[in-house]
Image 1: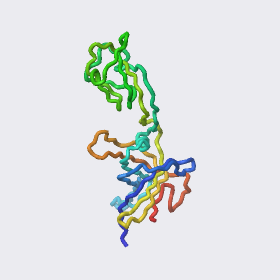
Image 2: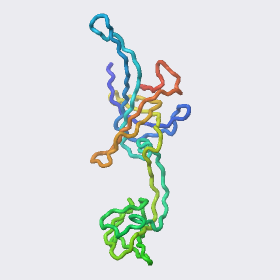
Image 3: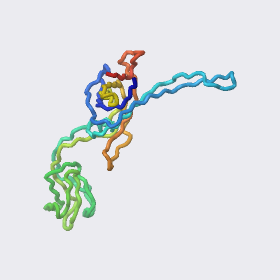
Image 4: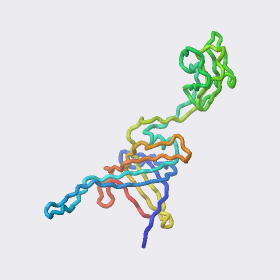
Length: 254
């Protein structure tokens, strides 16, 4: 009987506790591609008696495996894993008299240049100058504001005294650092369906995957974005060495 394969399914990733058991397991969402590649490095021996220098033996020197997956959902958890970072929520607050364009600019700001506030997600913005009796600039007349990004552009600063100062409230945001965490290890599980065999169920478990940072992130694109993660499959010393199933993982046809 022929057994063909075309897999789909849901991927799960989890951290590992001190005993090697998965914890904090979650799905990264839709995974467009998932590939496992096995590789060996071998030593080859050639005989030196016949005059043919024939290959007569091969010995496996090392074994290795890599996993590659393409994730389509840009959640903060997925991005933190890909960027070697941690996602944190920065609480909102208020700012009073934040200098715009530096502490003491020598002249009026350049009309059309973009200036950035210290925080995005801005509300109740008030922009004043540094006159003895501070004058308030009028939004839409003297400047424009992109409150989501916390950015300003001046339209007309004639008659005002620099530096300009901004007072505003800002909201909660999620932030993810880059290269702030060590190499992450994850347990990976695929609960799959073989669509070439009537959706027969297939389970794949990889006990210990050490992920590299993302290969590439298309920050501007005309396509649906996704990012690729590649990792090395490591031996799991918490599993007993088994000549049948080993310490790396298993594939189960259900």
